[in-house]
Image 1 (cartoon, rainbow, N blue to C red):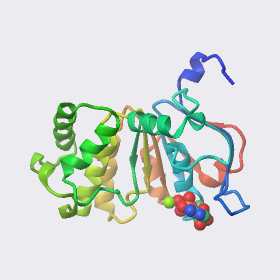
Image 2: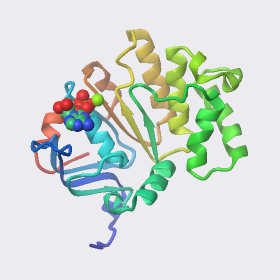
Image 3: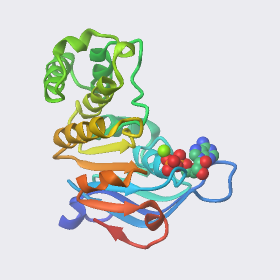
Image 4: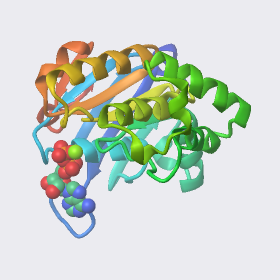
Length: 234
Ligand code: ADP
Ligand code: MG
């Protein structure tokens, strides 16, 4: 179904239409979202209790889960209709993800962790090395860290490297799954500051149960409203 791209459509980063998702073997859908769109450049906070479907929503948007029905479009691309290979390529080029547990590869060096993200996006190695060093600077980490194994990093360092890895390709969409749950208030504020300054030009979708973080964002939704109301946009 091809539709002309109007000016207003071209400014949409994430669009969900009639999305229903149930885990295989279960009958009750975890998500049923009639319509939700997020404008390019918006910084969006989605609040929800544990088990409310936040990670499921993010996994649908990044294409690691496929909707049971409905369509998902990202940057005007009908993402849910792409082949698995095209999804992987699109994700590597346009989406940066910071996971709750950071998901760094522990036996690789920091540089190799960051390079892997750039490699999958088809970047040349010299691009990555220069940019990884610049990114570490931005995140207030020494260049010497690049050659350390990820397993030797402190939690705070792991978080910053997870941001570096998510943002090395300058993705247009940045997805963050409550990465601050294990942090004290001080470390949390620092993390938020670094994340927001490095992702400032991106469309940012951040989910958490911790509502004290919502003031950092231009838009704030509750999972239960996304899951029941019709036609929500920002
Ligand atoms: P949140 O991230 O908000 O804590 P999740 O998206 O992880 O919530 O989970 C939403 C619901 O889906 C929960 O009831 C959870 O038990 C269920 N769920 C999550 N993953 C699976 C799975 N692989 N199979 C079946 N049910 C799942
Ligand atoms: Mg979760």
